[in-house]
Every structure is written in structure tokens, then in C-alpha cells.
Amino acid sequence: FLYFIGEREKKSLGMRRVLAKCIVVRPLGVRSVGGPCKMEQRLADLGVVIPPAPVPGGNFLPFTQTGNLVYISGQIPKHPNGDVITGTVGSDLTMEDGQGAAKLATMNLLSQMKAACGGDLDKVKKIVKIEGFVRATPEFGSHPKVINGCSDFLVEVFGKEIGAHTRFAVGVSSLPLGVPVELCCIFEKHE
Image 1: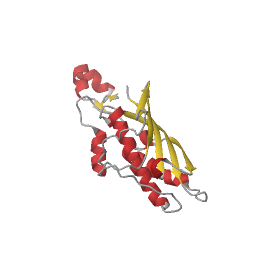
Image 2: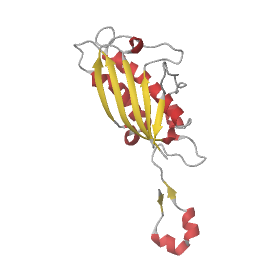
Image 3: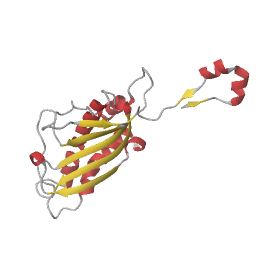
Image 4: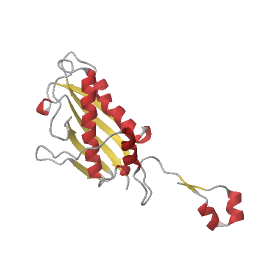
């Protein structure tokens, strides 16, 4: 967006000089041509290092794009060295453990987002939807609080305008590899 200093200056200085005095304002996540990657700086400020995108464990795509929407396949709490967090929330894992697992799974969502954006997270226009699955005991009913580990982290990274999203959080009896959380994501890319 371009905001001119003022109409009076525009008339008195001439268009050429006013263009030199305009202010360029971009929302968080939009990068100027050749400018620094704002999201990379934001992640560095938060002390976050995005791991390499995990390879799918089956015959499916890690993400696919249609129009400006990107659909990311289920991501689990898997460390870059291949270790996964396992357990059941409400049994051998606390709600806080589940939130930590959700945050780690979100790191893997971010790595897939980065891959889908050609390595540039500034191309993320909006996180549209998070789908959260929580492996929990039948008595456990705080599935949304577990998935807050994902939602809160996305808002912290992208800001509310880009990071706030719709979502669901459901409890299930099992997940692949015995993990406590699996997340899917839909996000919109800048053209």
C-alpha cells in the first residue's frame, strides 16, 4: 500500500518528488522485492529453527495446492532425528505434554509450509484451518486445550491477522506410531 505525505505537498512538489516521500506499508508476511524475509527474522527472534520437511510415510503427497490454497497432509510430533513423541493424553501424558507435542507437530507443519512456498514463509497469506486429532483416554475431554499448543504457536509466529484460523479438535483412540497428536492444515499463499 502506498500512503502519500499529503495532497498539498503533491501539488507543490510535483509527482516525482512526492514519490520519493511516500511510505510503503506492508502487512506482516509480505516481502518487498529483494528485501529481507520478515518471517525468517521473526522465527530467529523467537529462537525457532524450522526443521527440514519430513518425507511422507506412505503413498501420498506432503502437500498439494489448488489455486492459492495449500493443503498439508497430517503432521505428527516427529523430531528431525526421526524420534517421535508417543503416548496417550490423560494416561501417560499430561495436557501440557500434549500441548508440547502439538507444538512440535506444528513445527513440521511450518516446514511443509516453507517447502510449499519455495522456502519463503513470507508467501503465507493466511492460515485458514487446522484439523487437530488428539489420542486420549475416554475420560479426557480437553482436546481443544491440547490443540491450543498449535494455535497459540501459529499466532505467535505469524501474528493474529495471518495466524488466527478456524479449526477442530477431536479425541481419538489411536494415531499412527502411537503419537498423541496429528495436525492437518489449509493455508492461503500470496499470488
